[in-house]
Length: 415
Image 1 (tube, rainbow, N blue to C red):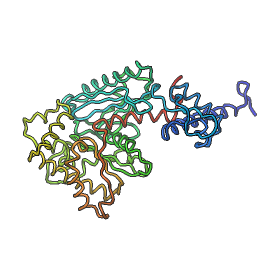
Image 2: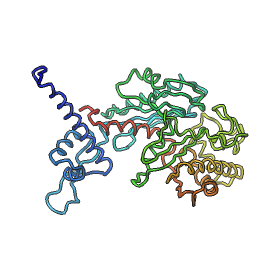
Image 3: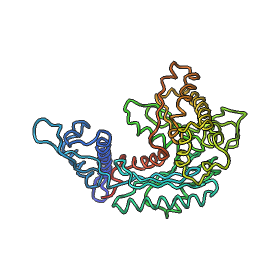
Image 4: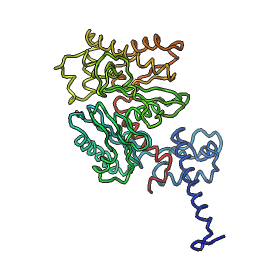
């Protein structure tokens, strides 16, 4: 066999295989503790099939990298000396999610345990500001989040940016964001330039896709493999999980449910067409029916949660105009949802964004429309659930995507 630099030619490949195997085993142990909770080394070995010595070595490295830490004694053992539990350590690394939406910019940093290390949202009329100024402001929010993570001694695993529009799956290029008034734009490239070509990876994805991933994780149901998320603001987005995986489509454009044509003779849509679903169920549609032009809740500079709080207050007070608008939006929500249920047969329909906030008034007409329009008995057995993530779903999903890189390859976190 040929020698290279005094070593056999195959030795480098063997070494590479060992490195790859160890990296994979580190991921197995880290994911196992994430998914099943604190475990003793002996129990991890038993449940993963790895031998005890290997697990001890892997845990030691994960502790050194700040990804696991020693916990309490294992009280589940009836005989012998109790082992020491190991658990996720949230102090070593954070994922950052950021979002551009029609009337706000937002950012969140989550540590490995899912705990919020930093969070901020500001009301902004993005369409009015345009791409350059909006991206400038979002870059400032991201920089604040990164600084907050580094101040506490952590590393940034990555930043994932959510945009309400057509984002090409492989490249992350924005093709169209009609509600922002943006056309084709290399958002990732623009943001990297503003952040000074950061060392951490930066990705761009559709905001509804990221919100769907966050909602799926929120439910934490091992038996749940199929769901549809409907998230509403000025626009309406959707995401589909089928067989436990996010449905992206051929080019990553799946989920643009807000532009299903449901009312062809209705209102013009920001996409240039007429009668899209979001023209009858988006927040703009609700406010058009429930308020006058000079009503403060129409002011885009007011935080969206404050605007919705005013709508909730009026609904709770029994305001006829508000209740009538909610009834109408809920019915139209059911019309579109029934199409999706007929096609996809999800176990759960998750309401996010403003749909979740106003769920107490939207759910009854929504459920009635689904029962009337879905062919399968009892609305196809689809259960309606309100997400508790509010308008933080997309940024949380983005942060989780950033952290997934660490769970896949723990060696990305330096010692």
